[in-house]
Image (tube, rainbow, N blue to C red; front, side, top):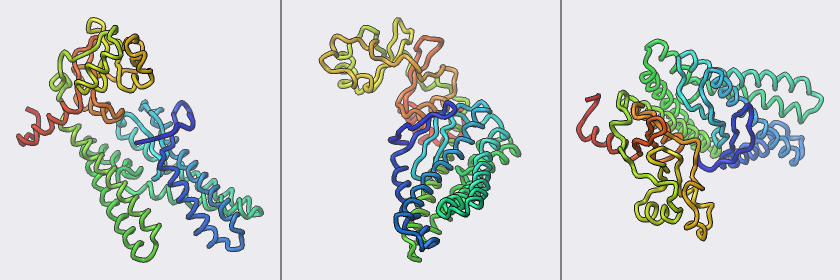
Length: 374
């Protein structure tokens, strides 16, 4: 998702902030401090409007984090690994590595987010009433009650990738027994929601609400892209269903021995042949992988005297077996933004599958008009 900064770890889950979150923080603070609070509380001083604005913005994003933590904790309880949570310009996202195992798991992982936002809305509203004697604090808490209620209701809209879209997918999946069809339907609903949002944003622009219109159009555009990506992922998974890694991989791939110098790796493989990373093997037994990133931290004066085994990554190594479906390798490539995945039988390197292999396969199928398996 681009440049992120890790700010914490909660319940073993890394919490990251995307650089675009800073833009969102500024926009929300500015909107509240210049628009909302001066209109609702004209008797306050200018600095007090800004204090309320930035406090509300920070607590809003804290609410989003709690919402995403709820998704992640339920996912972990269902046996679905979570690699982290990222806050960014449009809110937050939990990186759940695997699809839910059952429609029931999908339903509960999805619905717990809006339920959490509803609970936060009730808590903030109650706290706002109890602190009525402290005007600024009460106003902030009541705003957070309203905004969490809005987030809960918005997320329940039945369009993927919103939580309501995931609930819809779980229901259709349970009724049809087909997660692919359920995803396509939920993604289609998500694109309809996205078009409605973009149309609403355009109407706001024509009515003079420049900031609100632009923001709504961007949210719609983001949802449309996310829904389309989900649809394409399902299409790719269906295309590769039953096709094993062994049928597409490059057998007997090139590798380095542990004694190979860093200079030889850079000169003979990176610069001359364009490899960004290569496995390191001792008599075909996989020991690790060395990449350009590993080399960057080593001064060039030490390249000749340093072997690749001294700087290589030993674990975790991203591998698949020859019997695995290509969709598993595709998921690793996309999730970790890498170009190749090693294929191993036990601890022996037997092949390599790359983005190029998968893209070529898809292009040939398209040229030949193939729809199903051969």
